[in-house]
Figure 1 (cartoon, rainbow, N blue to C red):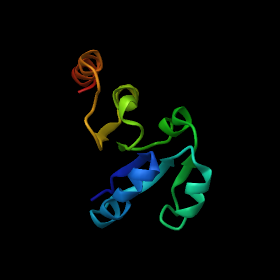
Figure 2 (cartoon, rainbow, N blue to C red):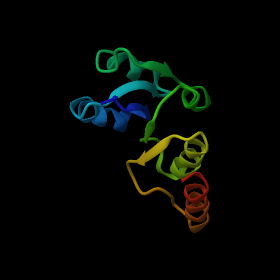
Figure 3 (cartoon, rainbow, N blue to C red):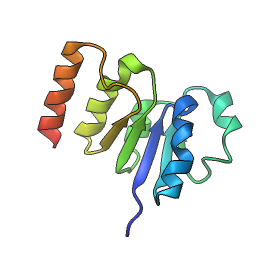
Figure 4 (spheres, helix red, strand yellow):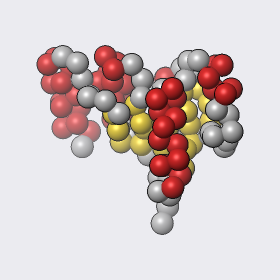
Length: 113
């Protein structure tokens, strides 16, 4: 069975998923975090993963799924961008903060499957 290649966007909360991903046979292939000091503090947990500080570069990394653990009001925007690239999305909070963002998110899900 192939390992699912997972990226984590936002490591302050997203790092809570590292052990679960590994335990369940996944592979963390990329992480994205703006706080370089925090990245340094957890480097042992993310060995082997490509490290990014910009979402656009991170999103171009080959991965099957992404965990969004970034700022809550931004989840829908980033989820849509990931789905448009064929990446499965897990939002660790509610997926959107307004009805307009919910509609945009639903349309992206329908469009991308």
